[in-house]
Amino acid sequence: MHMSRGHRTVGFAAVLLAGLTPTAAADGLVVLGGGAGITVNGAPCTLATIGHDNTGQLVGITAAHCGGSGSQVAAEGSGAVVGSVVTADDALDYAVIKFDPAKVTPTANFDGFAINGIGPDPSLRQPACTHGAASGDGCGHIAVQTLRPGVVGAGMPSWQPGDDGEPVTVDGQLVGVTLKGFSMVDGITFAQSTHINFALISAIVSDTNSKGGPGAGFSPI
Image (cartoon, rainbow, N blue to C red; front, top):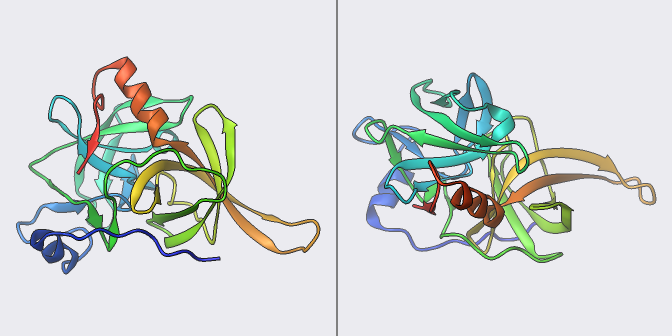
């Protein structure tokens, strides 16, 4: 079952960016936003979100298993190194990326996938959407509310390697960061379904705030 994802009205500048190639702005900077393809030490992953922390640094979030602290982050396709992982948490499996603002143009609407701020934690069976570098858009529903502290599950139409770190949104607001996906066959109907596990963005923000340092006080573009 596919659901319509939430959208917000974007400004003239965002419309111009949407008309360009996914990773190139008119000024030569790399355009990055939630759903953009990145490589972390060469491993393909997806950027969940980009914004600023409480010091004004341009930062983003992806899955920690993509690469630990010190890993170089490049834009998919161009290969341009645009930042590095500055902190990673194994418990929630998230990584904070510090971007070079001289190389990146951040956007809240990447490839037509708009993220309009941070939303409340989702509830069971609530419609949710993703945008992965490998799979593109997909919408499903929240299937499991708690797998472990701060991590829940959702049913989605697809997931592929390279989607790790993709954003999960409800009504166009960010609610989570995808950690992994898998397919399974229902024992009664024998129908194959795809599921993802994702860390709640509320848990990630709370963790970064409690630790201080890069990412603390994160606010998306």
